[in-house]
Image (cartoon, rainbow, N blue to C red):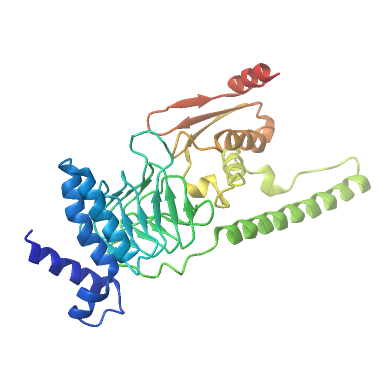
Length: 333
């Protein structure tokens, strides 16, 4: 693209993403985020051609003029808009995709002292709210949104919304979502949702306890006769297992593994159950917690004696059965 076409595209981007923009002259003179992008382009060109000192000087000048620090080594796509922009920091190995929207105080930071890829990669049409910090060589998928004040330490799926410290997933990802969405302030609170789920589960447990106490009172009055409720007598074993899996909650978002789509396979036999869990990242810190909770919920249902849990990510990276758990516990002892 020619220089004039690029400037026109940048001005059009401001009008598209900032309802406060009044005129072209105002945009050209009064938008430091756009000025920072303009200064970054020659600095990046010089950086790629090994004129590193001159590139850093231009970058430093841009920081002094706009309050926005963009390392000349960073890759910034087209139609990127930095709104207000004061305090924005974009690290050397960061990659910012097309149509990204960054607000003031955003930091795309690194987490390593080695000269490797150590900053985030942002996909297309990502929105990062004010004061958010995104750390490490993680991926923020296309159309994802990060709520204001969040600290993102793990990769975010395409179309997902994350919020909090550390950032947690809110609801289900919408990877096909397109267009400009400025409603980044209307984000639900995952902590409140988790508390609500806990209260709801507590209410169900209290109801079950009351039912069992009632049945126990009947048994004490008529010790020669006792029968389970008809709903339990007729329940299919696989349905009972699925119901038990819905009680295994992801502690980060307060949603069951079934609702999150983590249960990719289920095999139910007479005394043995196998559950395949699809975990988004092999480094997920809750893998053993999920496996332990699945075993606790299922074991003992209608005589089930063995529960095997397998972790898969599409290529079956790791498998953890009860025998593996026994070996781990023996080694710890």
